[in-house]
Amino acid sequence: DLVKDGSVTYKDRMPDKAIPGITFYEGVNIAADSLKRAGFNIDIYVHDVASASETPEMLIRKRSLDSADLIIAAIQAHEIPLLADYAKRRHVNFISVLSASDAGVRDNEYFTLIQPSLKTHCEWIDSDVVRKFPGLKPILFYRTSVQGDSVAYEYMVNDSPAKAHFKPLLCNTLPRKSDMVFEFDTGRPNIIVMPILDFVYADSLLKELAHDFPSTHFEVYGMPSWNSIGSLKNATSFPNITVNVTTPFNINTTEGVAKYVTQTFKQDYGGKITEMAYRGYETMYWYANLLKEYGTIFNAKYADNTAAPFTKFEIKTKWEKSGEHVLFNENVHILLTKYEGGNAKVME
Image (cartoon, rainbow, N blue to C red; front, side, top):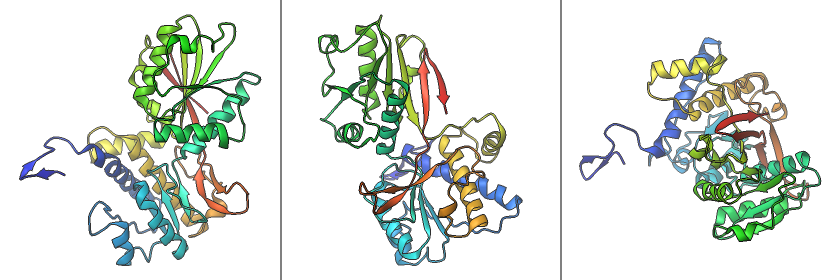
């Protein structure tokens, strides 16, 4: 991708798709230095799975992973099943850190999803609404015309254990004021849940609410992708709307270990540090401590997150609906970012 038809395509920056993996790797490198200074005896092997010679399939075929006690991978969803199956056969843990998809993996206690799944986000929102607004009937803005949004809608109404009693409003096209006017009550909180992943479309819905009902206050719950909505940080965009966005990670970059990682990153690599660098550091550091304390199969001790510098990981075993069969392990730790008046506050 860097060179096409003999010409350099990216002269002064890296391709966007390469940045998450590279910065995660840089965070791992900083963690490796910290572990070395702490007296850890650990070998870390890095494989570039974008290379044709180091795809997961090639690594397995060449037996390059056979000596591994742990596999940490920042890979796409379609690459997960092969590594998950390999880890299960080898009885080593495989940690997926980038994708929020379980990729259809089942019956695999050696597979751990660090990014909470879409289903987990929807369940968390449902439970939070029921807990904070008992007796109220929240409005559900949903879409069936987009696959991801349709799936999120199904999770929200059919799979969430809290079972909020929603008033559904189909939003395959932007609703008109006349479609919404009978749904709202100026005398009490108006709770709206929007399991809509497309943050551009979500931004349009929020602007519609702010414009059509300026004197009505709304408490809106949205998806983690909404953290990319720039207008949420503008004090004048949504004066009558509080927007609650679920997120699994919140790193205070000005304190403690995060400050050290920030300074080291700037010194060693330059440029602007991203969340993936902190996550690379945290993942490597925490899992190295789990290996040292409890050995290769540390799953029974997953509740020990004391060595994780930033995140209070909650790794839970996910089960089939019957409760009889294990699916995989997943981090279900969710935080809520509350946007109000252009300010963002993370709620534990």
